[in-house]
Length: 287
Image (cartoon, rainbow, N blue to C red; front, side, top):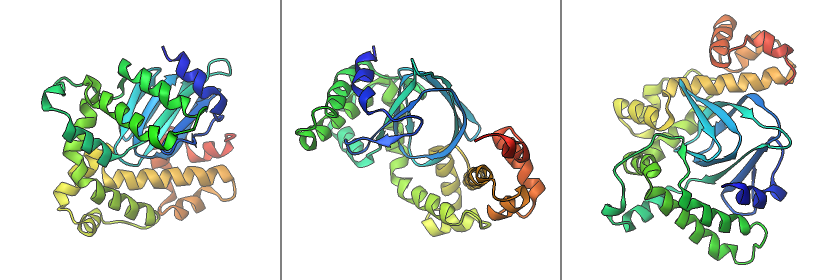
């Protein structure tokens, strides 16, 4: 089912890292071997798996994406992923769209309410079959870019339409209706957390800075990112620590202090809880 799409992407696929294509806001990724403990902050967007399988740890959630599944990330969120099924003959292949909330909101306003199904599937969910044709035309633009400035917005709008009017699109519609008014404040809070990564943060003060009541801030932050703001802050610290451990320039205690921990023992406990391995042992693993 997805072979024609994979064939169109093959000449452009990177190896073991994502890249943005010549089509603005369209990203592609390929892994040619299983990969464990990939930690990064996932940008907001719609993510599609064409081949292979991976698991994602988002807060306490463990999600699985297999060939044909798609996933929504409303905003940037720290994740740990494991690419499980991939080799040189049959690599893991995925692609992503940067999320355009305003464009999706406009399409929703143009769709008669009767066209929107009431049933919903949790995400990740199978990609609607109606997407195959517009996705084929989208990836053909990589080979024949003439007119992409005109065609890309139209194809993207068609893809959004098919997603929004499918049972699988119910979560996307819920995101727009429920969370769009709060995304600017939550994104502002995320920037504050990133800018003050090594500092102790009072999340109620962060709520005040972004202009939300404390209860509204904590509720919408968790609903949008799947984790609490305190856990978000902690996960970013631990991901930064993992990067520093990989450089092998400092001992574990120094790294703990560098990312904002006052206690190396507390850092080691939380590192183990998040990654499932002691940071000293991680230091001995080839990264």
